[in-house]
Image (spheres, rainbow, N blue to C red):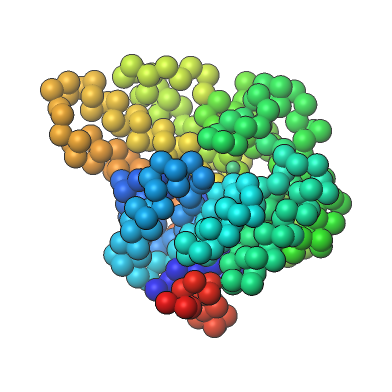
Length: 340
Ligand SMILES: [Zn+2]
């Protein structure tokens, strides 16, 4: 079963002109929507689970849902990843739960403490065959437990918070992380910017130069498409001034500058919510959950397929090559799976 670490994915994405989408999982419909889209596009994917998702759905349910997805599409390359792990204890728990990849986010700590906690997490994860994403620099916006700066303050002072290329090199050497989430002008949540988003492409380029071979990750990379905001607002929602990172800028960061992993959560929430609002508003007598969660799930399928295409992540039709590469690497599955 192609549950795998992120290594075979990033090996091919690094110079391959595509990035792997990382989509957050909270329940069955969201997972099914993501998986169906990736299967239809033959695209690798990272299913990521946050601390908040673990609390909301309980890990036993999420594990069962993910195992069902793997059983439905046994040929689909999937990595199971912890999003924004905040302690080494949580990393340990996720390794035991069978995650193939984890993030340790020490970016809110002083630099030396970030190095320390990341190096510790890497030691534990690598001993179990699990890959590690770390974070350096500061993102704006708010998402679940991850509170960055207020979007508008962040925007005004963004230069100060971007990842420093020389520090990134030092961090990578000291921690041995497998990939690095960088602050390059993206922001968490649906209200990312007051003005138009501008990614710091020169900064991505510099980090790629000081850290050759290190896969870079972009968080907070939903584009918050206006047509979905309009739908939400048309059917009783209140999301004025929501704004994301335009898809052509994501595409440029991926295709021209080599970003390997792009996190997309807000756009999935938006698609699901817009659709459910539409059903409630246009069919007020409807009370069968299948008749609003079903269309919501379809909206997620469309949103994810849109992201996988050549205009955003360009990861469609890459599944065979990644499976072949994983095969060549000798399928070094995390010890959790090896032990089963
Ligand atoms: Zn994030």
